Image 1 (spheres, rainbow, N blue to C red):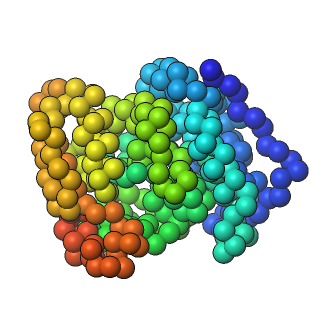
Image 2: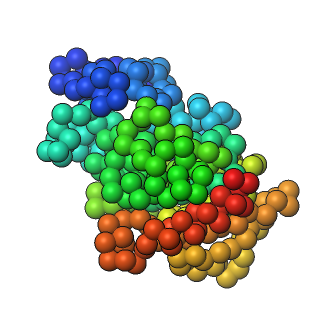
Length: 290
């Protein structure tokens, strides 16, 4: 079922965006001027898996896809969680509005490099409205992207902060922040049509895919196989620096690279170091023509 998006709730407390100063409610209603928000009050919202499949299948424009997925309400548990976090807020961010909606892909519409991970963080992307920003993991990732030439700034804290990707695009397998960072299989599969359609719209220019963690690795190989790519069998195993070459239906080779996720668990323990992350992203940048 597809439902219209509800308009702003005037009684919700509004707080200023850290970059623009504009007041927003939390979660942020579509069409109210949040930086990078492609949705409007009239953007249809999918309320179940069948509607996600139908809507994703009907869209052939990246911006329109970003608009539709950013108002999706198909997974009740995820909708409740992302919006509860947005309303309650972490104390250190209590003076900021929380996006509190699904996170669209972000970056170049014709990327040479794709970066794919699991899902937004509850107080990171779910707050900022931009994937992989607003937490320590994002700090590590953007610093490395800048060092290898895939980002114009070494940091990104908020949508609208001037950060841009260079020949690269980021997206999450599951677009809503899940409790304990663990989506269910049903939630993953409900969200999959958004991922498949976005991949199909941007894949023509791809030369490298960087998978952050085993979840991103599995999702990338599964999704590209569903799109008709030749993926090696048996399925390649994930590891930091793991490499697999897949081939598009028209014969274009794409290199899939594995990287440990820049989570604090990995970076604090030394399992992932800056040179390790730079090496993987640097290889991707070279393959992508940067």
